[in-house]
Length: 160
Image (tube, rainbow, N blue to C red; front, side, top):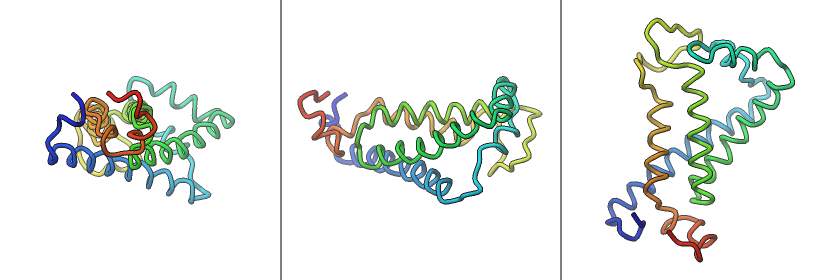
């Protein structure tokens, strides 16, 4: 579906959703960047579920942990900026989905899973990370950046 086939309400609803998720990513990244004590170590050490061993081994390697922290901070910032501006939106949405999948797999909302880091509610199978991942999927499937976003100018020749 082309973005010019959306009604104005549909188009602006999807753009507002894209910008809101972008803001969430951008703010999370900036808050981590501005906190000199921030590290993903505690989050990784608190992992449970199917891939617990992988996340714990990441936490146990200090060089890898530094790379993970850098990629996490700057990934959040760049994904957020891309979504807000509608710039390189497809790669930003895909990268956001991958990052959220890692967050979800590190702390899956399973029966019997207990985490030291408190969650904002009580979840079973579906949590905010999964919901935001699915929302990015919707943003990817319904391109608004062709009409409202910098991609409109960057990829003018290749309009979808």
